[in-house]
Amino acid sequence: LALVLVAAFALPGCAPSGPGPASGPIKVGIILPLTGAKAMFGEMEKNSFSMAYDDLGDKTTINGRKIELLFEDGQGKPDIAKSAAEKLVHSDKVDMISGGYSSACTFPIAGAAQTMGVPFLDSTGAADKITTQGWEWVFRGTAAPASHYTGALFDFYDNVMHPKTTALMYENTDFGTSSADGYKAICEAKGIEVVFDEAYEAGAVDFKPMLMKAKAANPETCYVISYVMDASLIIKQARELDWNVDLFVGGAAGWTMPEFLENAKDASEYVASTTLWVPNVAWPGVSEYYNGYIAKYGKKPDYHGAQAYGTMQIIVDALNNAKEISYEGIRQSLLEINPTTVMGPIKLENWSDEFGHNYTNQNRPTTYVVQWQKGVLEVIWPEAAKSANYVCPVPKWSERK
Image (cartoon, rainbow, N blue to C red; front, side, top):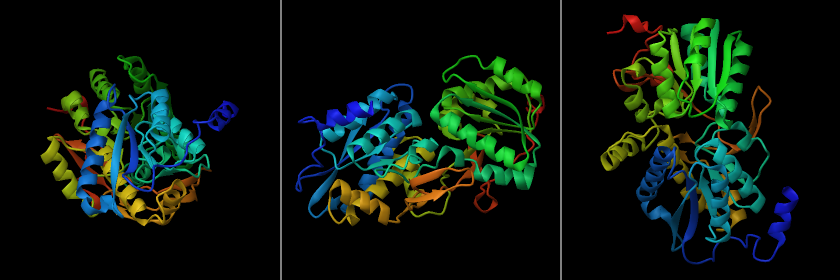
């Protein structure tokens, strides 16, 4: 396949001829799932990219050239997302690519960008492998590697819960397996026994057989990596089975979405989740973004929206500081800048973790633990950022009003 791709790009009219001319707009292509099952995420990110663009005002004009955003619908399908990246480069002559919701779609976008030699700034795709290939054209700033979503959670375990056993359930996707591998590795290092470990097919409708097996293992905690519809069904069916644990924790993704609350309803109460961002962090511009989004769109954004907003801040900073608007000029600028965004300070650098992952052009993450309490997603850890006290162990289902 690699040989076929190389040969194809060598044909006349197939190789990227570089970004657009040195006049006219500076084009940024953004690939998101604007239709399909994950369109709610794509809509939130598109809105947030656009908000950041508007909020950055004069900074979106560089030496008389206006930055132009070109949104492409990846439909939540890896092959469509990859084709969208190729279209943006070959037909639209974009100067760089961004976006990329879901790891399954982001990885082929990243691979295409690397093959074409075009800078790609991942906004949301979290699978570790996206930034462990040594790809020089692929960057990830506001998204943490999936195996690093649990930093604050394990700190909570260490200081509050001290669990000896845990259950693990996850969708069998790039994001799910990367997250699960990271969770298991840290559990092993800390002496926490994973007494139940099972992947499931995303989009299932009956999780009860899996939940019954997990219940029989009698874990103290349960960690589940799911998108929003699966997350809602899992917790509702756990209640139907009267399965009680000291703390039920989601692995970000769908567990922090407003739609999770809408679908799970009162079953959401006391469910915790890891997350990469909360609206009360002290970074500049966070409250303006959060309140502005609610005022404009009538919904509350979660960390996915903040990632998109922060990614647009990185893009504008990189373009303003690039020595020239070229693929190489933008790539070099991304390596040199250190902006503070609504997701915090960003430094795209190479680093290694204790589990043998070697990351390229990857920012180091900050994480939080949140918990649904009376319909509000409260920060419960770390203590310095908490908005409410944690409830743990949670009341049994039968003891709740």
